[in-house]
Length: 106
Image (cartoon, rainbow, N blue to C red):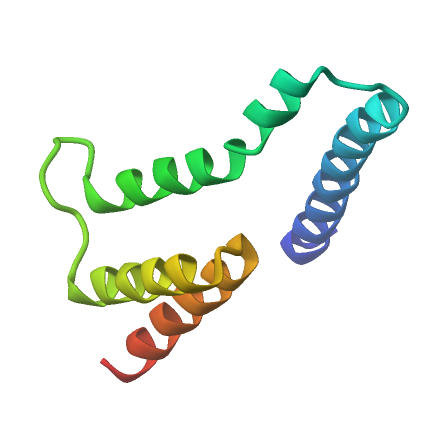
């Protein structure tokens, strides 16, 4: 078996495992009613994850700046789109599109 097939099988196996783990939680909690305080707290999970990703991008392991102007420009575009649209998927699309386009040309 070549390295290609081993990599392909490993990728598919990890993908199926990840899907089953996530689907298991969704199916197990689908019929559960959460208290209003828990539902309110869950609204802040996506913005907290985005903030953690942004901070980890901006600073390297030594605490100094790890992002260049391309990353900062993509971050600014994502921030503006998030401020205007208030939608995490639009933030991701705008920020990543900006990042990919700038990296492709500069």
